Length: 191
Image 1 (cartoon, rainbow, N blue to C red):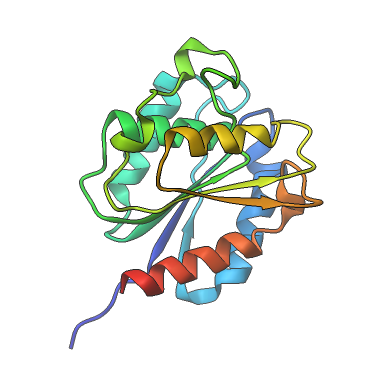
Image 2 (image 1 turned 45 degrees about the vertical axis):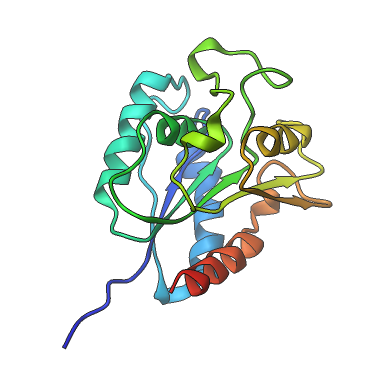
C-alpha cells in the first residue's frame, strides 16, 4: 500500500509592516478554504517583512522551496512574487514543480520599477524550471502595483499565462478562488 502525499502550496507573503498577520493571511485563508483538505498550504514568515532585501528573502525562499515535496505549487504575492521568481531564476529547485503563481507582483526592470537589488534578468522565462506553467494574476483595480506589470512579465516569460481580474485590487479583494481553480487544473493536467 502506498500513501500519496498531499500536494503542497508554498505561499510567499508580500512586504510591509504587519503584512504576514494582517493582510496576506487573508489570501492564505481564501486559498486554503478554496482548495480544502486535499492540499497543504505552507505560509512561512519572511524575515524583516517591513524592509525586505533580496539577500535575506532570497535565502529564506530557497530554504522553504527545499522543504516542500515533489509537485509543489509556488505562490508569491506582491514583492514576495518578485523575489520568488528571482530566486528560481538564480537557482532552479532540485524538485519538480506543478506551477509558479505570481499575484500582483511588481516587475523590477525596464518598463517597471527601478531597484538594482531586485532587478529581474531579461531572460527570466528561460531561467525558470522548464515545462512549469507560470500564472500571473493581477487585479485591474490594483493601485499599488500597476496592472501593466503583468504584461511586462508576459514579455520576458514566454510560458506566462495572464489572468487579469476586473474590479480586483492589490489583494485581489482577499479572494484567491481563481488561483485555486488554476492550481487544481494544473495538478490534474500533470497527473
